[in-house]
Length: 566
Image 1 (tube, rainbow, N blue to C red):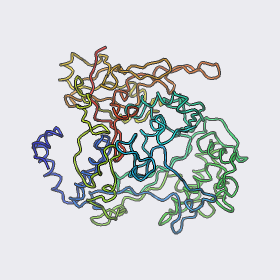
Image 2: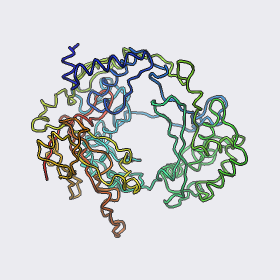
Image 3: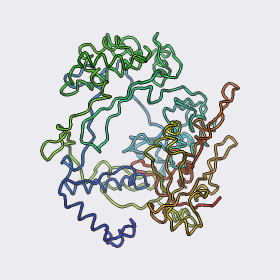
Image 4: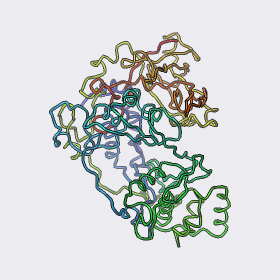
């Protein structure tokens, strides 16, 4: 354990503020919660930071209480419950089982494999985690645990989105490491620009999506995105059906070409075809409509509204006669749900006395036996199975200072989202771009005065692992990380930040040659700064960012940088 003075020094918060916060937090009984997201998770010690926060909730005893910790609650899309018409999870004729070890080495312990060769391992293994975004391309680059012949990416921009994402570019540009690269994208993006083939996908206005929920709301919901405009991609024919070119159409076309079971006529089983994307999605909507107590049937006026409000859509994405045939007696319930953009629990039903109605209602452990049964792939030491403080470190346990990352780099670099510019692709939405035409390097007035900076000055962001302060695109172009200063008192001294969404080098921001024709770029999409390439590269792995070896988070909030006036 540590003294309050030591904890205060570590977190940079006064003892008085810590004590005051603790008193207030515990004064509400079970009607208070420590809710977390990226802030404490996106560090090299993120897993144990989150475990610590959840341990506070356990000590408060607030799980499932009104005002306490809650779980996300959504209406079921895949069927299988009583009353739901389409058990999609069970309709998998010809299904094959996965085998072998994935390229990111997840769901398996290093020491249990034939690749075990002592510690440190060449790269991390992830017995507790999956979907480790920052490990995919770097693992391919190291051919560990094996080389690949082809890469397929979908809705992916790791070069832009990841801290130290520039490390992915060198691998993507190397045809020896990735001989063939396919991408599904809505534009020529910062990652798909390196692909051999790009298959056009649909944007948010043209596609289906079941959004689910997030554990920040006690309401049971299932928002459903559905096409509202005619797709702009070309029309293709798959299984004899016309449909817009999309990721789903591509998967169906591959299945048709390969003669895969579980697709085409009777793909879901006798009488249930899977020849179009909406064969899947409209059945999901019917399942949502009948989960638990079914929704009411839409009346005639609602059906009329449904049909007339979609009359502008082509039959390739809106075919009510076919949908009615698929959903049968549940058709009017489907209309009821789609007219409302999903299904949403009524407010009066979200609480039961002092409890939330949609309860987690499961065992929550102080001690994680599963975690304690795993080992750090670099040190060989067991991972703690409980909340603990582990300082920020490299994968082999060096502190940033020991790694030579801090000396000469006094400013702590953060990043965040602007509500009007939330994704790597948001820059293409000109209504939003007009609100936030560019971002800035946000700095406290004391730091600005010390560095001789004022709002509007241009600065370059550099770090110990990117001393040049550039994005090297490996095509003869280097994009410097230069942005305008914004001086404010709303950020702590010693800290700088920038918002995501600007500083593009692809996504229509520069000229592209397609079939010997120049498609002019729009310089509005290139404005501002994107400083992810300044974020620390792990000195042991050398081709990816600093990361959390237990939970898999990336280090967005640990880097120290220097600003160079331009």
